[in-house]
Image (cartoon, rainbow, N blue to C red; front, top):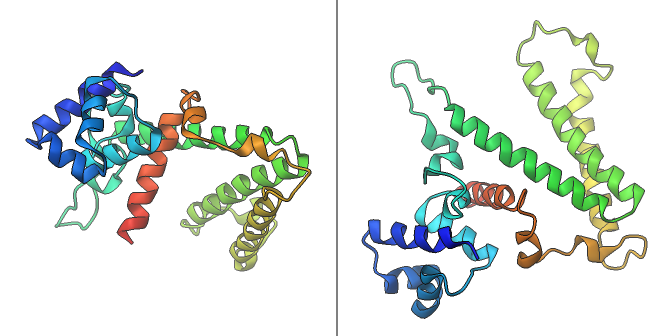
Length: 224
């Protein structure tokens, strides 16, 4: 039981002058259940943690007592820099933002790769690793080629075809991963890929980062 969570969600609600009844209604739960969460009588699931983090516009880390500031800018980069009306450029992102989001990306990537390894299938593991490497390769080429003076001799695949070829292979790997991870594939230990909120909560090194990544990505999805 995380004692910090109950204290923090109570403070967040009271600071915003939101009644417990209203908060419960907004969050889609009963007032009695929210009262239990705020008193530390019951522990919420991970899906509710993400929902209430979105509701109060704070990070999951903050609600769990793992971050000292409730700053929502950690998961929303557009809130962490201001437009300069004179130069039409953004001010640099803070070191805190960069450090926090690097941690989210690194931890989530490590968790996904470790999850793939649990399958025990070499072809499946290789496809997942290849998928990540191709995505990194594609982004590196985009950034590298932003400066046209950069040496192109480090690449054997020409720019004219590289991006389309990478996209094609990424799509192929994605299809292969989905096919191998299907329930009718006897070569993969599907049970090792099944995740519930209880199991994820034991992954203390990764769960908070994964939840923050889900929160940030879904905010972007819903905004488009």
